[in-house]
Image (cartoon, rainbow over all chains, first blue to last red):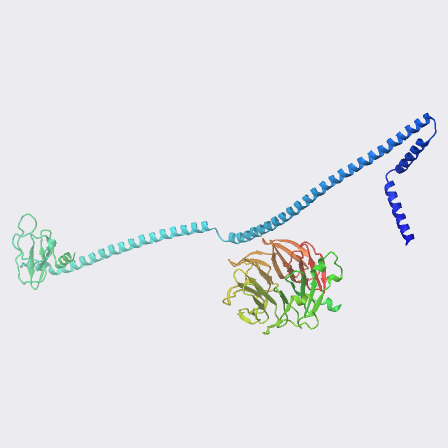
Amino acid sequence: MRVDMGAVTDDEVIRKRLLIDGDGAGDDRRINVLLKSFTKWCNSPATPEEGFTQHQRMHGTLAQCEFSMLKTLMVYDMNIREMENYEKIYSNIEENITSAHEKISECKKEIQRAKRIRKNRQEYDALAKVIQQHPDRHETLKQLEALDKELQQLSDIKENVDAKLELRKKQFHVLLSTIQELQQTLDSRDEQLHLVGVCGHLDVRQSLGPGGRTHQPQEGEHYRHNEVLVRGFKGHLVQPDTHRGGPGGRGQAVSTPPYVIGIQTQSGYLDMDYLYRLKVQ
Amino acid sequence: IERLLHMSVFSQSFSPCGKFLAAGNNYGEIALFSLSAALGPDANELSQKPILTFTAHEGPVFSLLSTDSHLLSAGNGEISAWSWAELIKKCLCALPPSLRSSLEIPEINAMALNPADNSLAVGGGDNNVHIMDLENGAFKSVLQGHTDYIHCLSVRERASEVLSGGEDGAVRIWDTRTSQCVHCVEVYKYETCARPQHGKWISCLTTDSDWMLCGGGPSLSLWHLRSMSPTSVFPLSGCQRQATFYQDMILTVGEGQCVSHCLMGGEVKAQIPCTPHSINTLAINTNSTEHRVLTVGGSSDHIDVFTNLSYKAFSLRF
């Protein structure tokens, strides 16, 4: 046990000695030498010059020792300051690291956002492609309007043409019917030409006047020819009078059995058909 | 070794905590991989192997889906639900599934979860989509209308609708409340999308509530659901088997040996090569932030893991 302890303590001692003396070449030795020389000088019986030189020498070594002490002190200060510096730098770097971490997470969020935006944009593009394939709405509307106008114009033209067609039809119809009448008149005139000379009473059944009453023609009465209708018969034969002059024309009926033929007016002889038609008008 | 050569991974699903990946293959096995081990700093060969492998079904596992507590796997005619907690604890040895479906549906190709009313839409070989209530496992309704088997399903949350795409080339949109087919889009009839040399079947379908991606025989195309019109067609040569919307991009996998990154405008931004020659499934781990990876599985026993979307990091092996 003791041997062990001795070994340990020896090691310790050696280590400690090495640590202490690790400073410079023989600083510890210098102090020992100084101490020895000081004791020798105190106890030396030597001459005052020698004593003085010894004294000076001792001062020198003392100064050397002080100098080395100062050096070590400064080194110590410097170490402390370096440590502080390093601490500062260390904390600075730590801050930078944390801020960089934060920036990284921010950027990651940004990337996510940007990716989402890109995805949305691509979706829009894809939809836009599909939409582009369909024709533009304005153009289609314009085309529709133009087509509508054309349609309108064409229907107008059609109406006009139809109206004209109708009108022509009616006119032709009138023309044809009047021709037919004329034909008939000419045919009937040929038969009745010899009956004109017979006179008769006019029995006016109905007049077209506003009252619509039966009217017996009086002498001197004026009739406007389009107001008189001769219908029915009375069977009188009347002598045709000559026209008496006077304002307006006088119409006298010429009737023969069995029917009244017509009216002799100033403007001419009017037969039944014509008179009937006049009534109708 | 031969077995490994012929292996195809058909489906993947991430655990609700995001730390595990379950993959189903054509032998009916489901392998569980630990993502935290594989992505950790001391990852090695062993961590790329599954921590648990078990046989779930006799036939291939075409579809895997994760709910909050269970892993649903669809085999040949039945759906099994495995509890994630138990799977993670690796309680093996004759692990019975917590639930087996009562109805026999031949060849279930796709499952989709509708979180709104906690129901599962199952599409299968009998041309119908069955809606199952997850709480009691009973089948609520059947959506009939397809004339051929169904490849893929997707749920449109905002409008509470289910989209289904099938071999008959039609994408049908069903209203879950009335169980009626609201729309029927026959993609192959549109000249811009149709590729008659590949056929008319629709094998991948995904929706983003306003937009829909569908592809397969016809080219992968982006559709606007409101106007029911195709807005962009993607010039990818192979038939696409799975596609997802991710942030502002569209990721899609299919017959080529790569993952294609596309923009919604219709251009293909990048094609990242990966190990399997023909890729069947693509999954993005959105359940966990630190293990946000993309995994890709296909006609090989390797599952590629992408930590950064631009390149393949490593592969998990069965």
